[in-house]
Length: 122
Image (cartoon, rainbow, N blue to C red; front, side):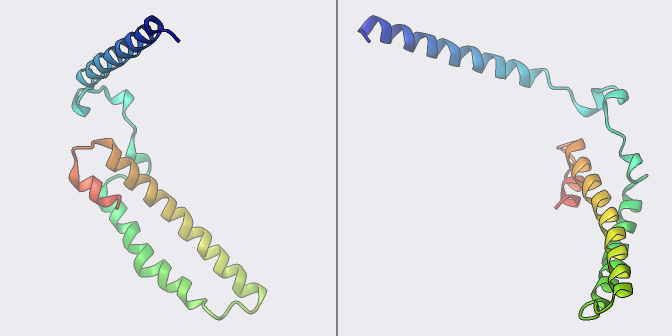
């Protein structure tokens, strides 16, 4: 490649970087605050839990009810009936945990300036 071709490639690369940087700056300026976004474009977390208290109630149920019940099966899965009960309880637990996980993650992403929601997801 001769020196003119190299200079042309460098010019194109520099111009591309410049355009990218300008576009990125424009994109940041166009980001709306959550309060400015119409409700029809926001997800409705009430479909998962009506409020944080309902979330906390399920979280508490997992810790205080489901986990101890699951632990009771340790060393006792010796017959089909016991195994079935354990698997059914495990299914119930995972349904609740999936909902807890989805709510916590979506709540944290709902408003990245909301530190309380961010703490729930960790």
